[in-house]
Amino acid sequence: MFEELFKDSEFRLQSSSVLSLQNLITVPKDSVDKDWVNLLGRHNIIVHSYNKCFTDSIGEQGLILGYSSIPTAIIKNKLNQMNQIMRKGK
Image 1 (spheres, rainbow, N blue to C red):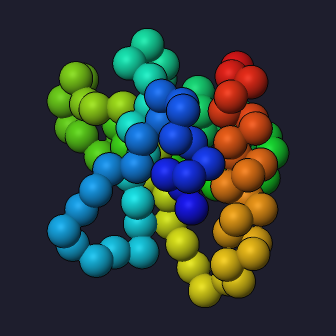
Image 2 (image 1 turned 180 degrees about the vertical axis):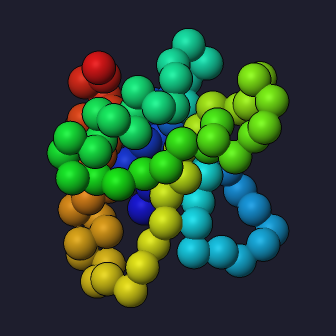
């Protein structure tokens, strides 16, 4: 779903060979993940800063998405909303 909605944006879903309930999204090079976390949070979309996972000051920027046991339709609606918000930017 994410790839389809964000295919012509700078946001990318990172592939992983490990099955997980979390996904990592890279953000544009000139942006700070904490700003995206705050922006999306104001719209009741919870994501987490990937940069917080690092102990050094050069940590990578990205967004961590987690999925829980909710209907696919709700996930799709939230991804659509997220897409609209992120395309408008800050």
